[in-house]
Amino acid sequence: MPVVRDIDAFVRLMRDGDERVLLRALARLDDVQIASVLEILEGHEQDRVLKLVPIERRPEILGKMRSEPAAGIISRLAPEEAADLVEELETDDAVDILGMIDHDQLRQILARVDAEDVEELEELLAYDDRSAGGLMSVDVFRVRKDTTVAEAIRMIQEAEELPEHVFYLYVVDEHGRLIGVTTLRQLVTSKPDRPIHAIMTTEIVHVSVDTDQERVAEIASRYDLMIVPVVDKQRRLLGVVT
Image 1 (cartoon, rainbow, N blue to C red):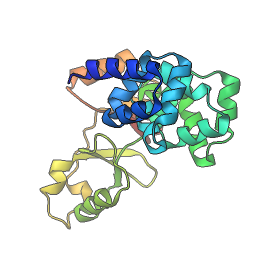
Image 2: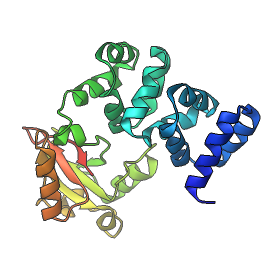
Image 3: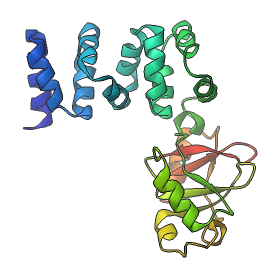
């Protein structure tokens, strides 16, 4: 059955009011479909559906929604509940959503978010949303130049969660400055005891955190890049624009 028909059928079921049937229907929809449903519902209907979704699925679903309707859902939650949900979101999704929430309400939510997460979120929220800093994801796989191939592979295998685009590994020095890049393919075809600096390239196209989004797009197109690393004035790696 096409996705659109699934969504339309679900909306009709929800408005008929039988919660048991609704729960069974929800179980048949994937996260993208539920996100699509939520985007076309009224606020009170969104809240009703979200309460029926298992807690562990909620962050993934909100992350697949457009920022504006997702922000509406977050803004109607109690600050404690909103903070718990924000902590489970991907960082770039959280920033996009929180950037649309009223300042006073945002302050109440952030006051209840884990201190380490708050520091990162506040820094990202301060960037202009039309700049590389406002567009970037901070989920980047980075390694030190003296890391061996075997150690890097083990780091990937043991990571609790990997960035979406882990086929690039960015190499940084002891100060976090970007000094090179290699690929997952290069990694797995190299001898285990080789240091990363022996297989990296130092010719890296990157942008500054305050680079305008149009300039970022122009650079990505010119060099045929799927991912563009973002650095600060000290060339420290901050994230990537995809």
